[in-house]
Image 1: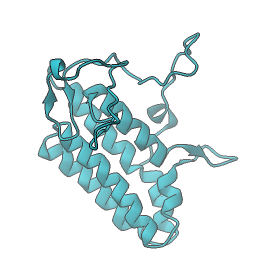
Image 2: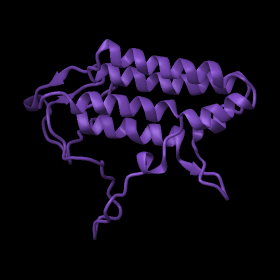
Image 3: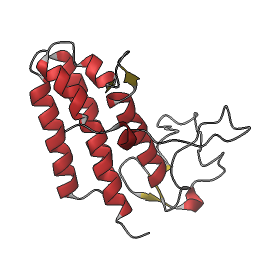
Image 4: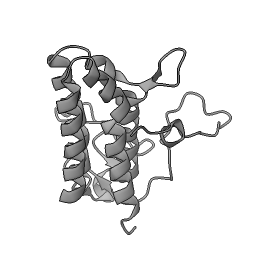
Length: 181
């Protein structure tokens, strides 16, 4: 079962005068700021910030992307899933593929690297508070992609069409949308 381009691509209205600033898609950031492990960070402990980010390069554990809102982290996962699964179009067709499909062409090692990237998305979903049944489905998608993707040639074609990372982000987004504010 393949996803249509309408399910994958979202049109983003152009904003005049906003050419060099990175933006997150979706609604404005709301809710608490959470760290990489999913723990809430009190607003008073954040100190002075620039557009929601705090840069502390003097500390050894500095991570400028660690203190993001839930929506910002979900946008980051969505961007990574798009890069892995649908970043490019095969010339002369409507077939979309991503870095995951290219990496998967390398026998054995490529499939391991692709599975590791997909597992990172599952780890981030768990850090966002996804329950066991959501993460279990996400792990199932990664397992299907990893096992079938290990088959030479046919597995690579399956990998391009199955799009496990896009499925996983869609599962996570549906679960988050059902959560109370």
